[in-house]
Length: 507
Image (cartoon, rainbow, N blue to C red; front, side):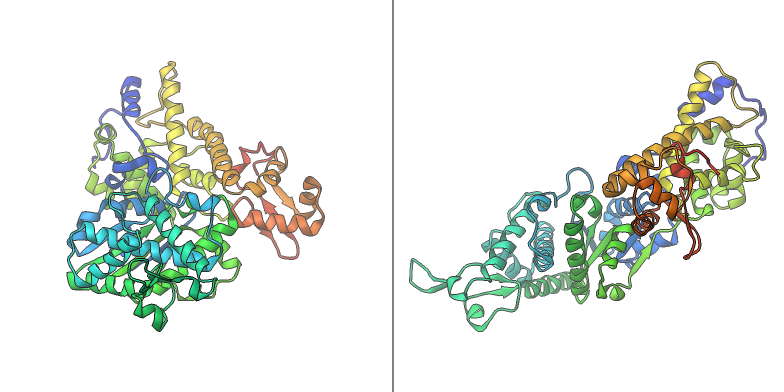
């Protein structure tokens, strides 16, 4: 990268043109689509996922979990060359396949567990048939599923799930009735017949003689067919927070059952579940007690530090041709050297947002976009820069002087971008995800950012014990930062949410 730009005092029109042609991307993976892979940071975490070493990926909302999922789906050709077939078990966009289960859910966790297994079996058979894999073992699986009308052609994930659920409900609720009611006579030849050959437990001798087979056996045959063909299948699941958002009990039953099925499937060499799940949802499962959690070892939690977030910003910035040319950037040199990344950031942005503060601009941005857990995520960072860009362009379009020197951004634009970022995060994440706590959070509007159990009890009109319980719930979701001690707790609203609630002090 050249050491300096020949003429640092660029004209307002030059800077406006660069800003107009520059984007930092979209805050969510769903919005970014194909552009995501162009500036994705291939971290060690990603390499482990791509190598198949990780099965379960946890991450807070906005941390990039869905970005990893989307990238995995975009690399299906490379994975296929390695003998891996990637199969989405949920729609990456649009309506979720599990939407009907909200209004008409499985009766309990056991029914959910059987639904997951049968749905995955159907999805596997459907995929392998479409790939033209020929196997005697696979043909037996296909014959059983077709006889049960579980394997129609050219249907959506939603239709496959619905047919699987109908079958599970019929068989499981039929099992509660005496066995002889399920055994009948074939009207053509008076021979014994049994409706529902696919069973969720090992068939009895009578059932086996009538051709019954367990889901486990069908999965075993599917695994054998894959091994014979030299393939493995990754069934990948994301958007589980959307699928079961309407009911906490439904979500708990569905996901506990899913993880039990994940553990059951680990005995198969050629079949693997890859699950992408929000950290807070996983913690809710654990709070209810989940002994099997200790057996889930192939997992990772997405984490971001200052260096990786700066790298993300720089990658997105230099993805823009106009900005690269404006600063005469050597892409390879910049990406290979953290010092050059820092240097480029402060050529684009001001050194400090407040002249009275010691924190440099990037540190200030991170301080103002982390939640009560002290974690930063790419979503708010990208949103802040996008809003700041819009505000900077507006200033220049109405004739205000451009930033000094070669900078594209001024401090006031970063500062004025915060209220929108704060409002969107508060309304669209916290209030939307935790409606049961919305009123308590909103009651803190115009209050101080630092509270005690006593002051919260007064504001909320609750007794001290209930106020403290509620405060700890708000710590869990990142609305409060816990301060003080266990005997004298204090709760602080982080800067990220203070502006949304017009808090009286930002200190």
